[in-house]
Amino acid sequence: MPIDPTLEYDDQNIFAKILRGEIPCSKVFEDQWALAFHDINPQAPAHVLVIPKGAYVSWDDFSAKGGDAEIAGFVRAVGHVSRELGLVEPGYRLLANIGMDSHQEVPHLHVHIFGGKPLGPMLMR
Ligand code: 5GP
Image 1 (cartoon, rainbow, N blue to C red):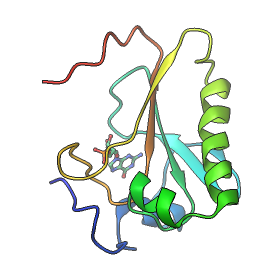
Image 2 (cartoon, rainbow, N blue to C red; image 1 turned 135 degrees about the vertical axis):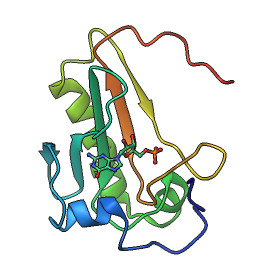
Image 3 (cartoon, rainbow, N blue to C red; image 1 turned 90 degrees about the vertical axis):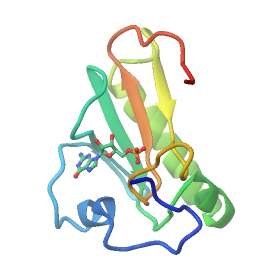
Image 4 (spheres, rainbow, N blue to C red; image 1 turned 120 degrees about the vertical axis):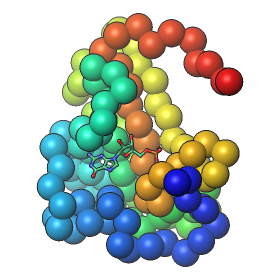
């Protein structure tokens, strides 16, 4: 079920539990601002999720309420992980689903990194 991104942050969401270490993840990268881990249901040979450590529901929430340092730290983490995965030269896709129309399922901001094969044009159906 898609989530309503206008609701208050729910600290029982699955990524909050991963951040607290209550649920395991296959970690790719971590620093003070962000955690990156492999998606449990990969849609491409490389499919990594990058999440900020702060409690933000969506990109909208983060960009409105996040501090400059944590926003910079998160954006740098996405770039760092993409480089570390070796995706710059072949190319890759970033995706952040926000809210109902995009079918966001986890109410903690996450950026998907997809790569490892030609991804084709982005299709809207
Ligand atoms: P969304 O549709 O919200 O943009 O994407 C949520 C993503 O989180 C999905 O790609 C889904 O496979 C992934 N996911 C959901 N639960 C877990 C989990 O417990 N562990 C990991 N690693 N990924 C998860």
